[in-house]
Image 1: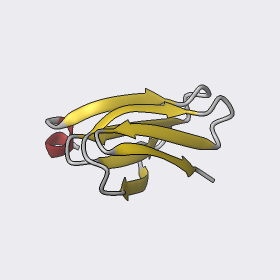
Image 2: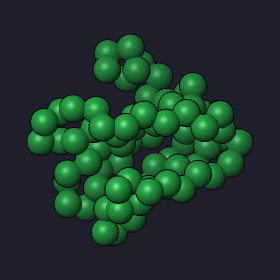
Image 3: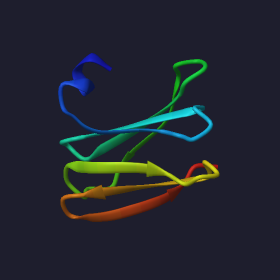
Amino acid sequence: WPAFRKHLEALAVSSDLRLLAAGCRAGVIRVWETASGGEIARYDWGVGAIRQIAFSPDGTSAAAAAEKGLVVWDLE
């Protein structure tokens, strides 16, 4: 986390506060479970720096806007 946060570009928390997602300049998105602090997913789609991240209202999917496009993924 310390090295990752230096390059942090976007941060989002799910509406139920269960998940935290962070995106960095290198285009990597990491997702953590807030209760345990454990990382549950890591994504690198090669879309460049992550600019924004958002969770769907029901927390089942998320989206990220990056310098080279938009990605949407299922969290289940």
